[in-house]
Length: 556
Image (cartoon, rainbow, N blue to C red; front, side):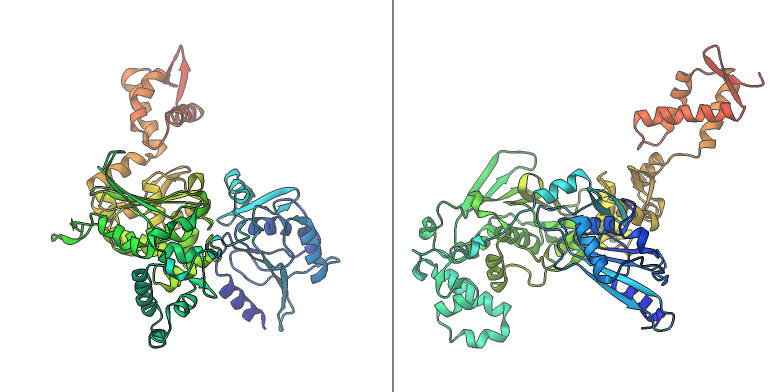
């Protein structure tokens, strides 16, 4: 490949720097392969491995990806460099760690592409006796929350859902559930619909990955088992409890517990939910849309996800709580396996690790969950199309809790979405965080600033005028002005005018003058510091002096 072809190849494979990809213009491997901690190859290998793995490209110019080339290899060859990195990074797996060398045919410049595997479960990767991580395109020492996340990762050695139940037979399965399973299998696999007619139940169950060589599994019982055969699951629990509550109450108005077969129970539960008509007045229209309060997909997806990812060994129920005319809560036990909700949506593909892989495969075959991934992303999209709040995930205490709100709560935020049609789902998710005063990652901050979506200083960000102005919302506009700091010269003039009018001003009087004019996003401490800085600036400029306990103009 020519130098230009190498650049195009790198740009195509690694189009941007993020937690998975890094470009470095290291030209002297002798000093940069294993050199200064936090700024050498092994530190970046540790950081990328401690996220989800990825690639490090060296010999290219940062930002532009122009080919600089590695000019000095020291004593390193591909093999010796690989050996050095693996031995300098504690817990790094050598199995999938690779270094690929590309040399341009016209200029002779050489770059290395280093492929870095994800860390092993519960084993952070160390370099220079410290663990590193990526936040956006920044390399930092590993944060405590990331370390805890890695140390608490599940180590799945056996698939509970594939366990064979020796005393169970096909007679322990519900005939109606098997019939429904056949119909759903035909929908999911239309190319097999004709031959499906010739399969007896035993063959169908094997083909649908519900049984193993005719033997009944926990998956078979959970999805198709007769309620009378529930004892075969003991001591484990496979139940879903639906509770109905008033919008602001913790007391149940009604409840029902659904047992196996879950393939039929999900329909029964769906019919319990009061999914009544909702009239949505869109900001861009005078005429309301009439729709169901909850999109059908946004009930079935979190419910079926809870069934698929429940840790049944915890012997706990799956919970579905309905707050009348307000929201739904879905809850299952078990650590959330992907790194984060944002990561799932960004990748938009099926996860590679499941707690119950045999159960998940069966549920896919029975049309219960998405085949190609993207189910969570679709939930977010369906909420944003309606201008409803985005789904809220709480992943504390090894429990996954999903909240789906069935109405517009913030009409101004709905206007924001309606008037900014070019926003992507990722944009909306980040802006939703800003509105809810949630913590933003360094990558999100950099992105939102680059797009001119936010203003303010970390951690006090607020929606920019570019986003607020098109909504024509009086509240959002007023909020923007309250959030925004005026220019320092504005406040200095206020102080000078006050002193001219009243000959002098104590610090308390100046605080009373300015305090409530400062941005509402500043804390009390920050406001006091701001006032002190303004006074100090005016003193240094030679405009005021402090005398006998008060500030005066210098020429008076």
